[in-house]
Image (cartoon, rainbow, N blue to C red; front, side, top):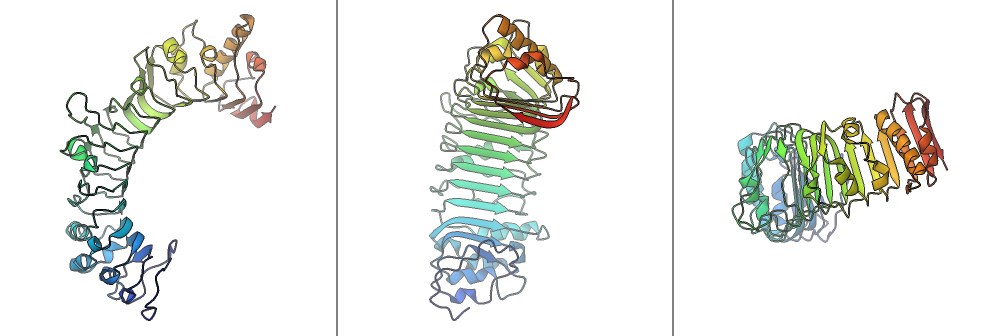
Length: 414
């Protein structure tokens, strides 16, 4: 390929079987587009070839960094000079590389400070390079760390002034998140809108940021997703006043105080220790979708909580038999959920029976104002039939019954 001196665009994206780059790729001085650069095991397609590709732009994914034989070759790539690059993806595919060599290579691959997106995957070093999370990266809007299993501490991402999306996953050495994550400057995470923390199997503690009174951390955060962090204890951060989407899954030791987040539009909570609603004055005026699934303990004032859900359109409940114990005789779920369109109940026959009784009571009182259009019942093993009261749901258009003894697998549409 070295004779193609006028070649400007080489689109090799989605070439999953590519094992190395053609030799002497560096002799294409006008090349601008090169999404994938795979480092081979030989000397012909090393990372040094990137040095003379001065016009690279867009996205560059450098993979199989474990094949870097001489760490000085990484310095020669001179990514700092490639100022047209917007996104950089650095990937190690094997953990056989030494932690020292991986750390040096990452240091040498520091990009220019105008980079917008950064992904690091499979990094085997014990700590991250100081350039990661450095506030000089004023254009950085998205960062993803994945499979960096030897790093115990996260970089100071809170000091990236324009960071909007942060995804951290599969980092088994992380046990605590605290001041090192926020950084030492003022207003940490002032622009962050999405935070995803997934599969941190040994993460136990999330320490709050110690800021002056009135200074908010995560002031723009709209989506928080924590999945499969089974050892995470305690509570979530407070004062997430912009939070619209909350997703918790597989965090068996975590307590979720939903009353802290009055701007919620959607909430999915599955397999956590406790859900708490402790402020009867909080109204979830924007909440439209709510899921409770296999929550060990529910602690809230039922009537006040139900009243706060007047705008919920979609409700999913799996298990959570303790929810029944929260109801008092005067508490009627459907009476308060006046906007509900879709209701899904799984593995909770008692709740289905209660709803049937409740509908009958509301019909007798002539105050049934239920607009459910779709009802799905699944794995409600002790039900022998659909409760009579549910026959009064005149707005119902779809009824789905799955894996129930009286109707094994079927669905109906109105």
